[in-house]
Image (cartoon, rainbow, N blue to C red; front, side, top):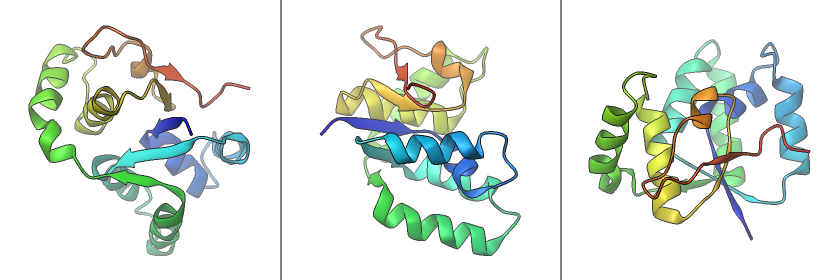
Length: 137
């Protein structure tokens, strides 16, 4: 089964009904047949942005347990994350974004689900583009 690395934006949009891309996030989740993978950096960022409601945060975490595979190797990716953040400091690449790029490199994942245009710029260590499948039909 193919994998998609999921960034913060779609996760927040899925659980915040006031987000502009809420319907798109629901539609993405309904149509995807791929395994959804993220990491603790993305989950932490999503929880911060969902901080308007503890109930929404816990709903998100309960969904994440069943709906996401949470990669556990972010600590081993730290040297690569630093390199990515330095390379893209003009964007700037934040920790969550850089950790997701490193996860994709390590696991050979080519597809991401994101609302972040910076992923159009990021390249893997072997100069490959990550394909944003969030809005793909």
